[in-house]
Length: 560
Ligand SMILES: CCCCCCCCCC/C=C\CCCCCCCCCC(=O)SCCNC(=O)CCNC(=O)[C@H](O)C(C)(C)COP(=O)(O)OP(=O)(O)OC[C@H]1O[C@@H](n2cnc3c(N)ncnc32)[C@H](O)[C@@H]1OP(=O)(O)O
Ligand SMILES: Cc1cc2nc3c(=O)[nH]c(=O)nc-3n(C[C@H](O)[C@H](O)[C@H](O)COP(=O)(O)OP(=O)(O)OC[C@H]3O[C@@H](n4cnc5c(N)ncnc54)[C@H](O)[C@@H]3O)c2cc1C
Image (cartoon, rainbow, N blue to C red; front, side, top):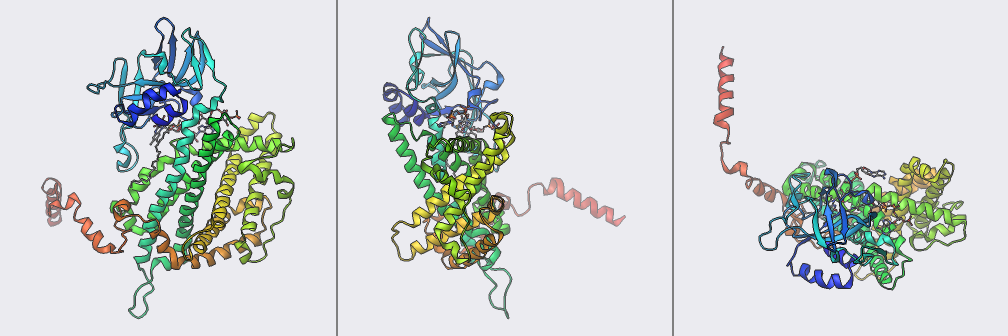
């Protein structure tokens, strides 16, 4: 994040100076924004950067304990430099949060520079999976940096100390986070596809119950419950891949527009990266845990690869923006868009469907049979009607409050659900668009169509309350969707293993004895067990100190 921050907020000159050093690892940088007391609320950060016109320097300082930088990855032990986000103060005025390049450690002996206190913040969730990352703590005691180490693409401070705001939106300060959020969506698909690959392969080889006359037991992958839990996750892995590809296109397009000072899609980029990051990471974290459970007891073994995958993955729901905070950002933009509908301003991009408000507020879903749910037009319209009606309902309720902000606060749980509905519509839309494309490979398109329908109808089934409460569907149509879902599972089953083999993960990358490509799980589990350090001795350490005295004492007591 050090590099994209300099790319996005540094001048050409600053990029020319600092990026080559970073690329060649002549310096190691981190992104020091979050503090002990503030993470979500960036505008609440307390670290100060006070301009000293006498020396043409900024004085970086941590005025309070809560202003200590806390969490930045790589900060504790590895980084020599940081992009530090601090309150810019010049001529006695606080201009809010800006980025500054600050050297933290000597390039000679890596010792912290004068006025810099550095360390690691300690162990984290799980069996230490994330402990390979030195998330750090950093405090400044009046550390001086040259004025030209303020990132000056978005705003500047002159030699005399005058603050100058460039003619670019101040939100570009948040640009690095937008960049990482869009990459996290693609990462969600990778993490989810790993977990699903393990669970599908293991479910194909695991047999339990159902033996007839001594014959083979039933593959657990043939159980309807296993399919109804696992195949929506398989479909989600593909869904997140395709929406992640689209989001990368959107991000690239926005970045190109920014180059020519076209800020028209900045809001769309923020809403989509924030919302898709929130929805895909929450779903993926839940799915990895579900995949662990789908593997029964062996899923709880570290050798399954699932506990570590879960422990490494779950902070994605928090870092780069807490998911609730990000969804409320989407909700704010939805409310702004709804409020503009009466002005005649046509919504664009992923909000365009809201322009069909007259139709969608009264449309009746035309589904009459289970097969009708295979028609993408019916799915699309149902998801659009649900999302729009939830957003309009929120706007109407907020409108009844004494003031907008109070109303937004009171209705924030409902706004959260409206934001999720909007983002799920985007995911479904992009999946439908993907399967409408020419897709090479014999039968591949049909399989992806099945998965697209599984993702859409599973999501509809899971959120049926929204669809019924908004009148977007009738209970009968909801039941038909569930009926069709069961038929789709039967169609996915024969290709389930092929659909995870298609991720083309090596056994090494997968890191799971349950997910081995050859399916030779039991010998691998048995072999792996003996590698456990506990098995280095036949009689366990502690026998003589603890077990033996206890056993002897009990034996003596039993003879009394
Ligand atoms: C087996 C083991 C291995 C297994 C491995 C598999 C899995 C691997 C996992 C993945 C691997 C790698 C992943 C790679 C990444 C991981 C690295 C972790 C990195 C984490 C780094 C961080 O966390 S950095 C810090 C992140 N912090 C945040 O996100 C803070 C969140 N808060 C904010 O963004 C803002 O405070 C806020 C947006 C919430 C509020 O902003 P503000 O206070 O300014 O108020 P407003 O809401 O009023 O906004 C003002 C206007 O600005 C608009 N806005 C806001 N944000 C943006 C934006 N980003 N872009 C554009 N516009 C924005 C907002 O809409 C308002 O507009 P108007 O209403 O028009 O005024
Ligand atoms: C593994 C990891 C790596 C990280 N790496 C970095 C890094 O490299 N650089 C960096 O700068 N930071 C980093 N962070 C910090 C991370 O960005 C923050 O933790 C994250 O942005 C969440 O902010 P917070 O901790 O202040 O959560 P809080 O906002 O304190 O969240 C606590 C609760 O409050 C709720 N909440 C907060 N505000 C609102 C609101 N307005 N309305 C409703 N509910 C609200 C949240 O939903 C949540 O439930 C990292 C964090 C982790 C876990």
